[in-house]
Image (cartoon, rainbow, N blue to C red):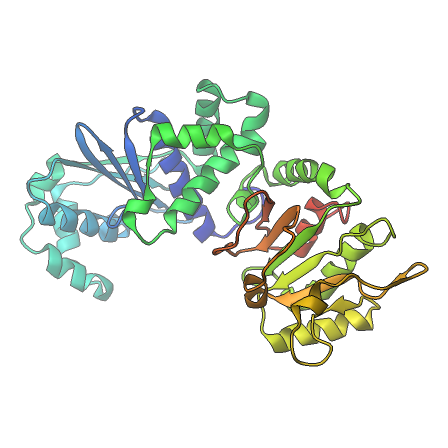
Length: 392
């Protein structure tokens, strides 16, 4: 994988790739439920329902049936609760090497008789299940390793007419991102997507998603380079109003790096007199944290406007233009807490709204605004993508 992503991320990416594989191979009218209530993936067609679980065990050198007891019990519980439903149960597993994985009635009864304390509630729920009936609806498949599955999906996208030159850095990572975004929705109905709609959405996307998921892909370096090129034109304009929303969650070393990042941004994009549009930074932090960051910025001769000469916030003060004396501006950025930004009545919308880190736009009005979501975890990656630095 692109960087040394831990096995948890690898496991999720394996699941997302299996979902993508199901989407690409399904009929146009098939509806996929990403990470269904019981199963990892559900595929609904006119012929019935396929309930799929994916288990990626890259570190398990020796396969034993007990490794699969939990997903097998989950599936049997679902089978027992839906005796009349037309459901096929599929378990996709990966173990290193050429290990043979077989599931028989002996293995299922072994799961039902397990003494594992963590499984006892589940075992009680499955008591009395028709083991032979479940086996008739069940299959297990040993799958390729993660890299091979990802390559198959890329090849399938090309076969469906997606530009070969853009599959690696645009369509494949965005396909994974669409699935990842669906997977976190709490309502199962919101995690459903039809193959036709999925492909239509994918074809309309022209910017590469940057997130913990896409940057964990093998093509991470190419994704960063591609996103940098996509942003270059707008960031190169002297007169362009930009708002930056910064979410500390998952941003590594936020407290150590945020002041350096803001200064680097100002030094790159707001140092000339022709840079007339004062950038606005909205940070998802408390007022005390914001004041601390403001003090540290001033210590580096980067003067922010907080919209409050003392304590009371004034929107008029916040949006006034800085006094300019020769080549010195009174202040070089506007700085505000995210919750304060959400309450602003913006008379002028930004040209660009950058979302840095892991966060949502909530109810912000972004009509006619160019929204750029950069979900990298490191400020160095963020600076590279935005052209502030030439390395990461």
